[in-house]
Image (cartoon, rainbow, N blue to C red; front, top):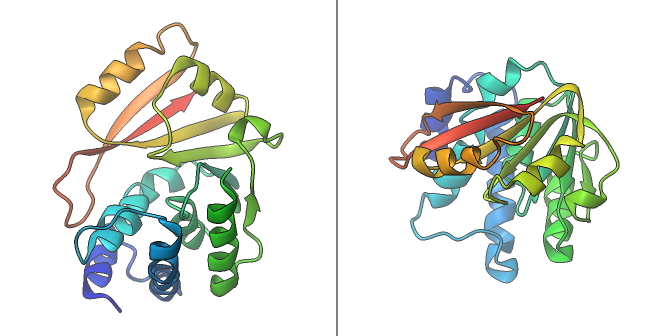
Length: 208
C-alpha cells in the first residue's frame, strides 16, 4: 500500500477499519487508470491524489459519524470525492453519488464495480432533479454557498438532516455565510486537519 495513505489513515484513526485500506487502494488505482483519459482530477505532485483527494475526503469522518446518518448523497461527485471514500468508511449507510456529466458518472459506475459496491447508487443528473431525501448531503469543490443553491440543497434533507460542505480558507467561508443571513439555517464551521496537507481546510455544516 502507498505509505502516505497508510500513514494518513493512521493519523486519522482509521488504520484498523477492516477492508478500508484495501478498498481505498483499489479506488486509487481506478482513478489513476482513468484520470488521463477522462480528466477526473488535477494532479501535480506524486502524492496529490492521496493527500488532496482521498485523505481530504476522510478528514471529517469522526464528525460525520457523530451525526448518526443512515442515508447520504454526494452532490457533484465527479471522480467520487468525498462520496466513495466516505462510503468505504460507512459501509452500512445508503449512499447516492449525484453527477450530471455522463463520462464521470460512467467512471463512478466502473469504480464501484471494481470495489464490489453495487449497493452505492449513481444518479446521472443535476442535484436539482433529485427527488430523494437524505440524512446527510455532502459536496466538495462543487459550488459556492450561494442562497439560491443552499435553498435547493435543503430540500434534499430529511428532518434533522445536515449539509456538510468541504471548504478551504475561513475568510472565503465567512463571506459566503454572510450571504445566507436571510435563510433560516444554522451554520457551524469546523477546522479540519488533513494529514500531510498544509492548506487551510474546513467543514461547513448547515442545518435547519
